[in-house]
Length: 461
View 1 (cartoon, rainbow, N blue to C red):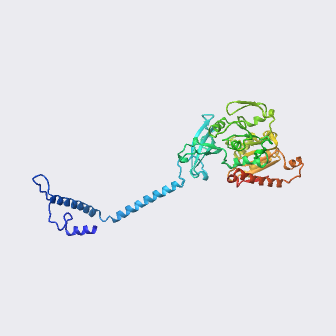
View 2: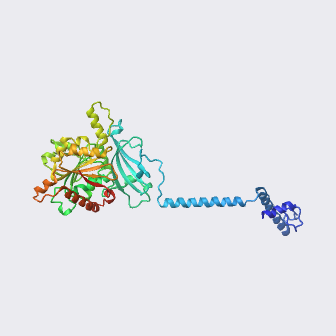
View 3: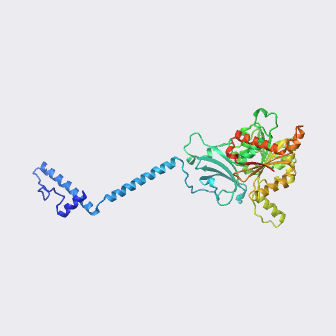
């Protein structure tokens, strides 16, 4: 068609009037009655039609051949449509997008696609943010789940914070997505553990027979448990929900941690779970007034009541401090605390370890959470040889595969002494250790901890 109009233009033929027409000027014969005849009206319509065609012809002559323009337009349209399809598909499968408000200062690879929202913060001293406890919700874009964690300090992504505890959240029955739901209203799932070292502390007392997971045996044992260090209550609430016959007593020194645990981590206080805002070591000393979580007081003493515990868990840590003391001994202590801040230094002194051992029952076990940040093997072995060996004849190490924590389970008896006291043949240490490893594998399956503890290693010193 473009070639046709071009030939017409070169030949001087106007496209306004057909070649067979004799009309040269518009005919506007006005009848006496002010109207037009039918023939004249048809001629006028024909003239208007060819006038419009002439305008189109002029535009095409100026623009040239538009075939390439139309082809480009089609290509751009196909590209935009394909792009929209790809975006829709990626969104439907939950593709992880980059989050601009990620607030981790040093984000691990496993958490490169999360969004962290501050939920609450309590500070004991307004001028010192180091004494603050912060609760955050962690939204995982990959798994479309939400977790809740508590940190020491202000969680601003710049200054380092001490990770304390983390729990899983249960979404409501009706919700569209974790990203547009208010996770503050979600409930805490205390039947599920998220951290490897928490799962290790939860299972080891059952491995060594200090606790029984058989409900029929709950009246045979005293089932007394003490935990020093609350955090978010993930360990004690897991025991409380799964084994409600255990009598659990928790001591937490920081009142902010206790308050946030009750408010945001769904911890409870009832007949078998008791929380006290008190230094745990003072429970072993003279008569004290222990302040309850709900503000009441309990006028009792561990020594007066002569309670022996089947399990004592030491899960409290020091804060990492700069080494600025001029005293060489203080420098060495600060260096050791920085290299291994957990357990807290006041809980592993010779006097404290002696008190812990005396408060264990005959079949009891003491669980220590070690966090060696540097020189793992040197610090762990030195801690066992210089601190624990003088009080606990048997200690077993549980080394985590994914986290830096090491969990120690220490018994107040040696294996041979226990076999002698029960008037049974003496069993070599290595055979008993093999038995514990076999029992551990069985309990990992029963507890559903294969994903958490499947690669961790039980080690004998």
